[in-house]
Length: 101
Image (cartoon, rainbow, N blue to C red):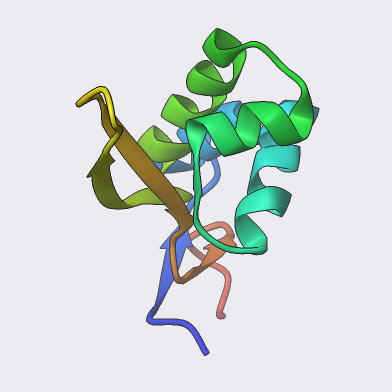
């Protein structure tokens, strides 16, 4: 199933990063696309029909929150670095410390 289970308390730093990242429909759409399989930033922008800067902003927030990861790095014909993003394999549980999970 999942590699690990991560328990977070409401208000801790990672929970706040996740809330920030997930506070947007665009971020949710990106997660849905990555649920189909690894994708590049270009793949994401084309699917969602959004500017590259918008996609990059949301991808960076999702990376910072640990919801996605860079699976691999390729190089384009022009020699530019192209990162391939994927979902992280984890189950996140946000609950108060005193809760018996």
